[in-house]
Image (cartoon, rainbow, N blue to C red):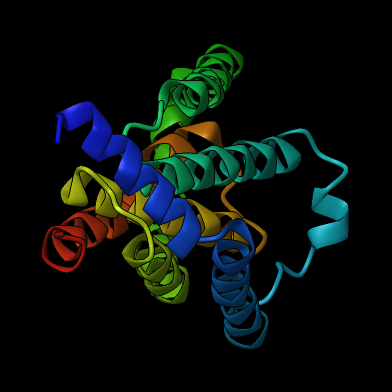
Length: 210
């Protein structure tokens, strides 16, 4: 059998074994479990409604939520052999570029004496702890969905699972985090998400082989 024929056969089989409904149900369960943990353990910030009237808080939520959506798209595509990932890479890059504009705007708007304060924030260690912790359930759900597919690159698929789980966890944590500075978000959120990506990549390399 030619390689192209094999890829098409695996893709067809993965679509049968990892039906969209099943995939959606597993991911929804992981997301719901994480939302419950967030509500019980962390919860939204005390000034949530007031923060919504500011510029930086909604901007932060929009960026991480957009990355969660695009990362989920990459996750689903990575479970299908031969699937094109570029359609989901482009909006991911655009979201990161928008965050970069936010950082640039903050550097222009604030005096340089305030940069370090905004960059460090007040709870970076909480950020680096809570996001990976909240990502456990969605990461497990993402890996389960990939197990029902046929990813051609297990490590990369696992990394996308970690990225989707990490960005979803970051979106929830952003509702609690009182550090709204793009400088903070562009530094510590990616580090926390990166931890989940590495775990997902390692898990994928071991669990998603076929």
